[in-house]
Amino acid sequence: MERKTIVFVLANLIIVAGLFQPVVSVGGFTQEEVQEGLNSPKIKNLVSFGFQEIQKRDKSFGQIGLVPVKLLSYSTQVVGGLNHKFSLECEARNKKKYILQSIIYERSWQNFRQLSSHTLRAK
Image (cartoon, rainbow, N blue to C red):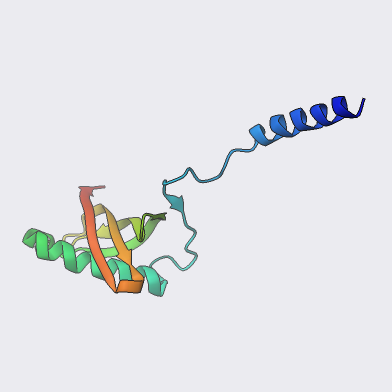
């Protein structure tokens, strides 16, 4: 009787464990809540770095005079460092709206940052 009880309990634990899925998939991006939005010192620093790096790669980026207006989303991914992925609503000098999506790779313990990718599209 005792053996049947143990098997029954284990079977139920396995079933219950299968009902709970992890919130984050291994290796995936985790959505972060940033209450301060663009006023967050961390986000300001990342956005400033991203803008500087994009301007180095694409001279026309600086010519349209983009200014970040709103943080739309921010997520991170642990990958032997940290990927910061964010979407920003930006406004050009001519008041046209754009969405900028960027990924910045960072290894803070080595004081290393790199712009991995970026896309800019009209809103």
